[in-house]
Image 1 (cartoon, rainbow, N blue to C red):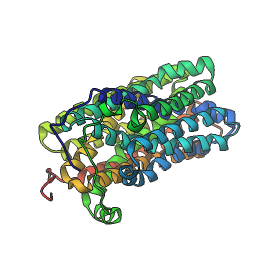
Image 2: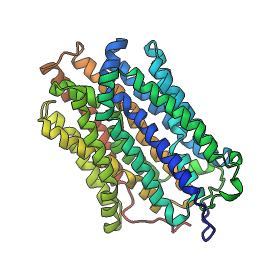
Image 3: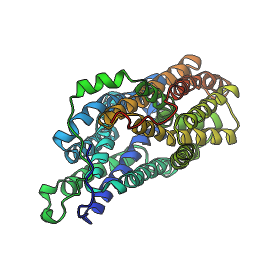
Image 4: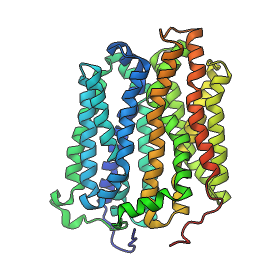
Length: 426
């Protein structure tokens, strides 16, 4: 990775920023949107909770397995082309999802979405690195991440109200078409060879990823303790939260408190607010302490206790406590930036990208497992899906699943290096 400073900066970089930010906002909205309509899908297509869980799992599985290959080929093919392809796949998958006549087509639609999602973030990082200088890089990525969280907020109460008024197919169809439009727009805005005024909008080459032997790098990565520590950290705190909010949060709270879809979506909103707050707060605390390990142990432990508190209350915590639990879990997910801060500090630069992809795979492996296992536990304990005491008993056991996954994050945080050994190898 090479930095180049002091070159003229084009104002066109802000056009690129807007294209990336608004694309990420819509992508995040459709990514989390199915969690609002899970019980509708289950009723309409007549599938069990475990089978419904495969819908989220196939999406996150494809995202997970494509991380390292996409990172390896982005520099050769060009991040702009891969981002455009990912946006188009997201749009096509969302349109297919909205028109699905049966559950099989529903799965195919979400599989396309998962494949498309895998192309998005890593290529956003590379495109930002091309257009923005080193001292702008972190702040711009943070702003784009905020747009993504805003999309997640819009996918809570506003989206639930929209679905209640118009049904679920229309809103997803509109989101899919909008993403296809964004793909065409990004092809024009990001592919400089297509821009008539390209001679005046050349990017600043602030970031360039060097090509290195991938297999050799992978061998070194999987032998390092920090790789497995950060893998487990992301597995515990990010994946469990994403897997739950992406499918089960709204139907669980609708059943638990006998509330409407829009009212249950308030819990998702609170969780995403926690995520927005968690990132900067945890980052500040970590920087102030001058290390990542102790703050991450505390964060992982608190998240584990939050999951376990649902089981401790018999599967039916007071409503106010559920709001606190979801906020804490969202806060922890936002604080999972410590995974990548640790990698930046403790990993040589030439392996940081692959190590980041490896750690990110841990988070999405957890997101793959949770929806299916959580749904399978509900089916086993409460096969008729009746509300009341049977549902509460099912939730008592089902919430042990994210508790166990979260414990893996506690273990991972304990294995982190105590101090930044970052660039000594460089």
